[in-house]
Image (cartoon, rainbow, N blue to C red; front, top):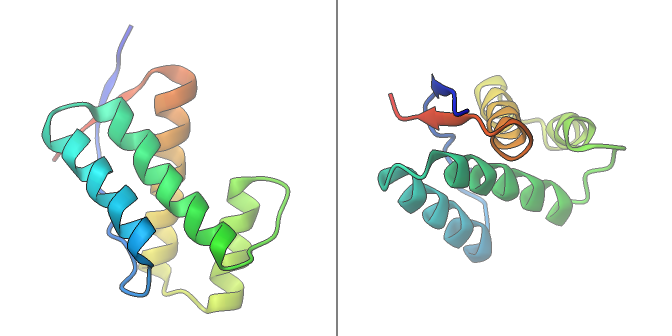
Length: 102
């Protein structure tokens, strides 16, 4: 069974590297082609890669996002976007939820 939940796509931080931009672009392409589960996993992968590249620590992606946000002094809206991408990706891969574009 597929659930469709509406949520906007996170935007990549301007300081992200070329590899992160390419991953983000692929997730956007998936979303534009209504491959919402794939897009959700892609956006989550971007967030995880950025946290890893920036040396964020923690036992799971939630903790690594929080650590990265604290160390990098991320604005609250960007932190919220990272957590939305994490939730969308987790729901997409683990529960088969397909998030639709707004």
